[in-house]
Length: 78
Image (cartoon, rainbow, N blue to C red; front, side, top):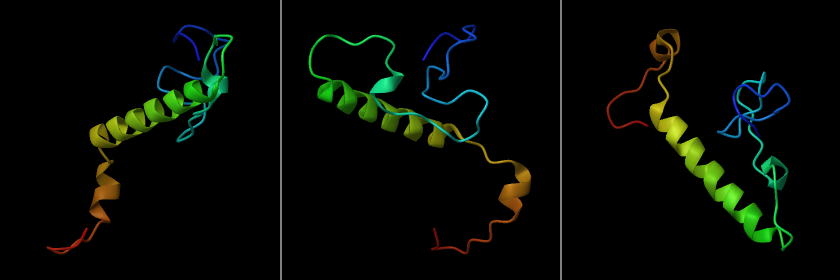
């Protein structure tokens, strides 16, 4: 994970793999520096943070108009 101008960073700040659509990495390898302690709590934190990022992105997602036109929901569905 690195800054947006870091050419060597594989992930952006939202855990998305650069150059690949719809792929995130949510494990301890995404942390640039770790402490000398146990990594289990760090892994839990990364997972919790990733879940929040994914939920936030889903709330802010606006589907392209061509995708919305294919949705045929009747009242009471979905």
